Image (cartoon, rainbow, N blue to C red):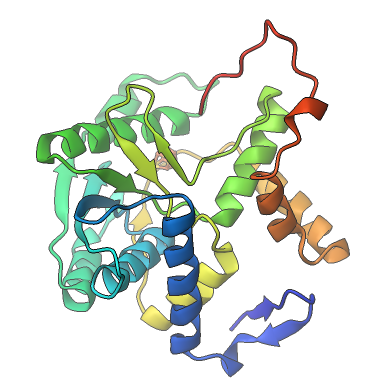
Length: 268
Ligand code: SF4
């Protein structure tokens, strides 16, 4: 098993920690994020986007635990948008039914067919793939009158996105823990926003479950991997760097930035 780094930078073997320890930490962090960013109100119906990857399964499990225990009551609607690339999603759906007591609603989105018809070898189709999946989630949320859509992005995803936007698009921005979609019709929430990926992965290892694998032929463009490597190097020098960066994203000295009045950043 891997090791977890304490805030002091000391490596602590995961074996010394129990599943209950990780569950407690995740529930605390998720509950706090829900409250801090006002993600969920009493009586909300929350769609949980379940891709079948580790992050979405941990999100489903923790929200399922909290929905039965939190002071704020809410209902979950797990939804899987099928791209056509997933292998063996049934296995994961059975696990969710057994562990969380919920049936996953599956929506065929024909994304594989759409992507193969727009074949520009110069461009990665991942952004389009993501937009198509998000669009299908938005329209389903409208159909069933859901109050929000929970996505499985965690703290590392948010920090990496911040660097990707800085390095490759020349823009300061990240992924908000909670925001209303551009058309104003849907609220997207990220309850794992303050959870480091290491915590999510270590907890997932107790599920004894293989995440869904994708037989997508597309190779990611590698930019995110580059950023991950930089972050790992930084972490060797500054052990708490991820927490500092995440804190900085909510503590902005706007007056010190180089903003011209004519420039308006596109929302993300
Ligand atoms: S790798 Fe394939 S499935 Fe994943 S986002 Fe890119 S196109 Fe979509």
